[in-house]
Amino acid sequence: MKVKEALPYLIETLSQIEDEREARREALEILAHLLEVPPLNVYLHLEREVLKESLEDILRERLKLKPLPYILKRAYFFKRTFYIEEGVLIPRPETELLIEVFLDLNISEGFVLELGCGSGIISITLLLERQGLKAFALDISEKALKVTSYNAKLHGVSERLYLVRGDWFSPLKEKGFFKAIVSNPPYISLKEWKDLSPEVREFEPIEALLAGARGTEFQEALISYSRKYLCPEGFLIFEMGYNQASKIKRLAQGWEIKFFKDLQNFDRVALLWKKRGAI
Image (tube, rainbow, N blue to C red; front, side, top):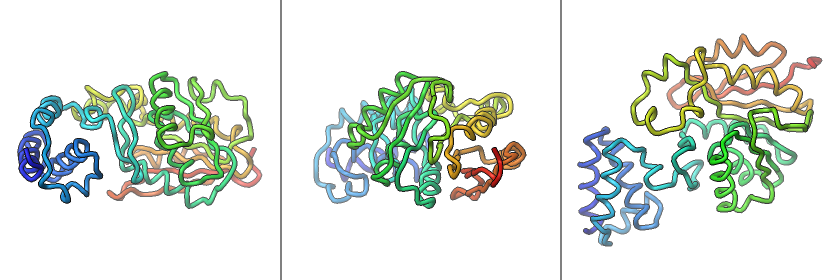
């Protein structure tokens, strides 16, 4: 089947489970995967052939609502491709805002710590954007650390990335050491969990999404424990739920805090630093 025939076929089929805009985006990702080109370059290869059997294999899984990154085993983040598999969180565009907030701080050397690294996209992207940095990436999941290790090798930053298995701060001894602590922690409340789409609830790791009854349990731990692991001029940066800014502001006693909005105008990333004179 020629690409120019496969594209409308994919869009029509995928439109059974999502709107046409999303169906087109996923159709381009599927064809890009099969052609081994970037998605936007698919239009340059309309006369090339793809196996219809390969299309059908992918569609069969996708129509069962399995997320496309788990089918293709890759996801895009900050203009780069990362390996992904079931058991680690799928990268979201909103998390790119966290990267932008960090880069604007002009931290060009030293150590950063990522808590809950998942596929490693945050740590690895920071290392790629700032060649003088080194990073510790911590996760309790062995699978997450394996995926992070693979992505670090894929992008050539293994020598600057140190992987640690453990539950948040418990394995760490490096107090007063980090220029920044970054995290995309679980921030879905029990109530919100029930309203998530089956595509998320049935396929993505619950431990990477569900925080607890309040939804802010992990941010509470970050705010409470990060202080002693940051250097005096260090920063804490984390992603949060769209409706959590007021709760987090109340928690951040002894910190200066600034929120950054996502493309939907929701407060999505928090930047904290120690108030002058605070211990």
